[in-house]
Length: 97
Image (cartoon, rainbow, N blue to C red; front, top):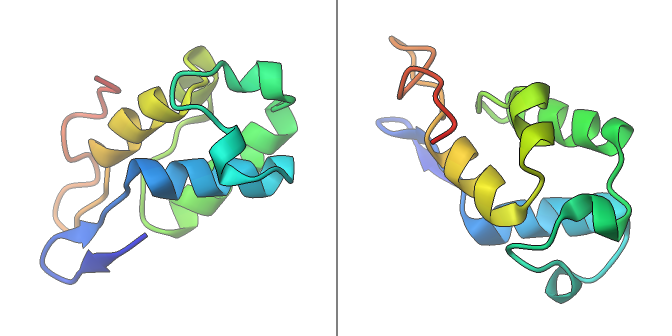
């Protein structure tokens, strides 16, 4: 994950895939962009772990939103649209889409 002071943190599909792969202890190439992550063994505790990690990196990562559509692609869209900025805590009103 990278970012600049002017734009805040950013997230890419590779960032999300790598984070998911790390908590599942699998290779990133084994995590498909549209695969239901529960089918790969992702459980609620791991979703909470990822959510906490992303919040510490300056992203708004709501557990309920992540749990509702557990795919790398959906999470990337959500996280990329909710990076925090100093003057606005929700970049796009907090909408996951």
